[in-house]
Picture (cartoon, rainbow, N blue to C red):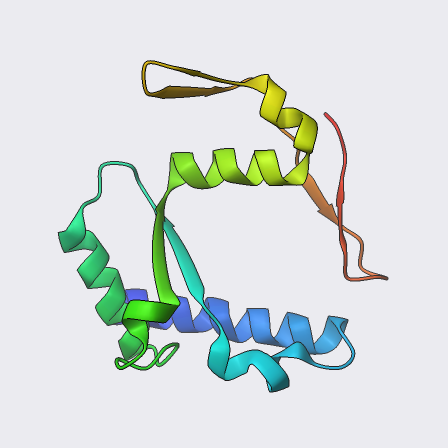
Length: 125
């Protein structure tokens, strides 16, 4: 448990630092108590593994136990990657085929960060 909570705290601390150094005004000051955390997990994971991660999030003090049910969300990795691709480029929605409850992503776009603006930019492979 400690390894997971320490790692989650590390990721969150670095995310806060990035936001503070990149955006003016600092969004964390205004939104810190309202942040919702979305964790992706392998498709085969079930409630047992999700509860473990939920306890690790609380132990890392990222979200208080009283708010964890409304501010912590779990998403399977395949669903997360498909949703991301569709959100990044609307035309990707036409490149995704759904057949017999299987999703096939036919295109992918990597993200490259532009340091100067703090915005994400999409570059086609």
